[in-house]
Length: 271
Image (cartoon, rainbow, N blue to C red; front, side):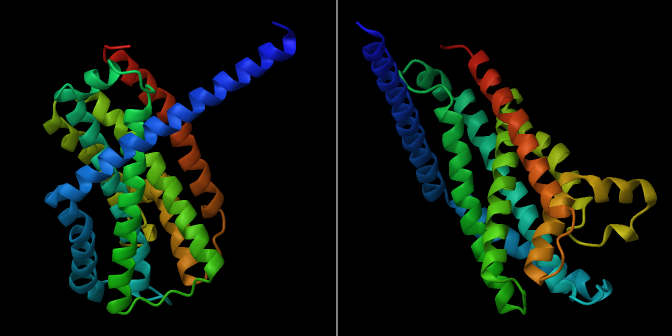
């Protein structure tokens, strides 16, 4: 076999591996999406929970919080949107932990499929679920008076930032699902990590109103940069440093979480 034939064979083999990796990921993504459709609790959480948060914060606390210029509803909806994306991504950890506890992961590893397809399938299903959740939330926001100033290009950037953030939190959630000893402990891990990030942020009130140590944390943590970037794009305000800081935080979390989740997944026996 000459050098050219050998190179062609190597290229064909690489293409075949890429093809089967994409095919395996697509099949397992469809599996996760079917679980969402057939699970009434997930559909209820997808549609009702973020809307309830928005209505409660707006109608219960909105009268006591003054936001200069934009009004509290316009200030609140970007925060609720990012909070919903973060909590929605926790379904990844629950799905990963359930597969591990029920032996489904071991069964996958006994099959000739791509090693990371099982995790990637859950993550991609989360993207689809959070996209639907975000659309529902903003539509209800319009019904109660939300009045964004975003142009088409701004909405494209909002969707891109939301996807990037969801991808980052979903891979972080996959790690939580892999290290959790039981399915019940997944909820506690999510509460400890996601709850402070979303509530000690610029989601519901300006950080300037917080005590100094909490204000420093709120102003510099990644969720605040995501919220402020999306809020500025929605309201037609300057994004400032929040745009690139939000992108760097999200890419950084993905860069660390993907290999970590892959290593942890391989350690769970099998191949």
